[in-house]
Amino acid sequence: MFYGEYKHNLDRKGRLILPSKFREVCRENMVERFFLTRGLDKCIFMFSEAEWRIQEQKFKNMPFTKQETRNFNRMFFAGAVDVNPDKQGRFVMPPYLKEYADIQRETVVIGVSNRIEIWSQKKWEDFYTNSSDSFEQIAENMLTL
Image (cartoon, rainbow, N blue to C red; front, side, top):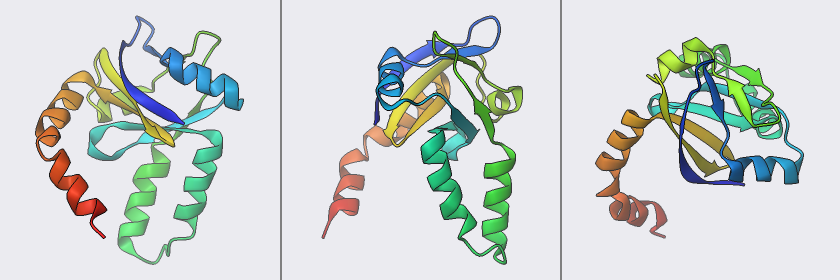
């Protein structure tokens, strides 16, 4: 559903704009509402409302008697906020999520199929640099039958 890598800056009001390709996908699929939350690797996860409900159900079905499950759910759901981008695709990023992801102004917005990830440009560049050399090895390990 969401694919690609786009650089965008927060505006003076702390708003981020969805890449035009993502806005097209949203129009085609009648997506108006998103959920943002703390992601892994210090990025922000952004889910369409429909995908959020799928993820929410998965986590609700995990045993809350396990400490790891409780801890993850607390971080994931306590950090969640719903946003409705305006007609230009802009939405306000909450300060606590910007702080979590170390976002000042420059961001990289990437599509990861069923979700969008929002990264500080610096963190994305570091991740990409550290991961690109091992991409083939990771693929080999993951895709070996």
